[in-house]
Length: 300
Ligand SMILES: [Zn+2]
Image (cartoon, rainbow, N blue to C red):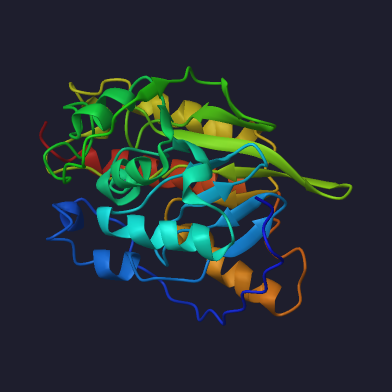
């Protein structure tokens, strides 16, 4: 199960995908951004035991061990065969994926989970608020985008993990950070991986954008009254976590392709940015404040 030494070189031009919007997310079939998000891209070695296996616009990470692997996120339903192909291209077996994790339950990050679970036989591990959504295939009324996001294929065998707990597969340990707000069950994942003496904390930081269906007000929601507190708790968690490398569900949101291009250009530590999680949280807090301010003029 050891990966062959791979040299996957790819010149990556800076493509900026549009930010996800509720309007764009009606369904996979009616999603103007989806073809761009789902464009294939070569998988690459991120650091240590961690690999990027997502598409050009939707991240998926593979954390590997001799005892089996963990896959985080699965893109759109249409992304599943691309992710499986990327896992194989790196020299790993899809059947060795033992656990699938998710950032949040929207169709552009969870849409491929059911299919990848079918292919791998993996268990799916999710937060208490995300698990029933994955099992049902539809988001709850408490989701800010309720009514505006497509449903997903129902996922079987979802195990609930409490916030702060650790998922273990062999020697792998990935910790769940509750970073809700974008969805009630939003989760970031963090683990440490080493190359020789150098160990980096990787953070897969969930989406922190205050996007909603028409009519949802973050400042006075009756369906998700704790949304602002949840966002703030998540920002604090992201500010406090050790963070050498940040990857986000939409890779462009944190400049992954630009960092990869710099690394390809010879800057060996271009992926590392210890301030990235703090800046990610600060920007999201600022945007949420703007959104809340804009809601003052709106009728409930
Ligand atoms: Zn989302």
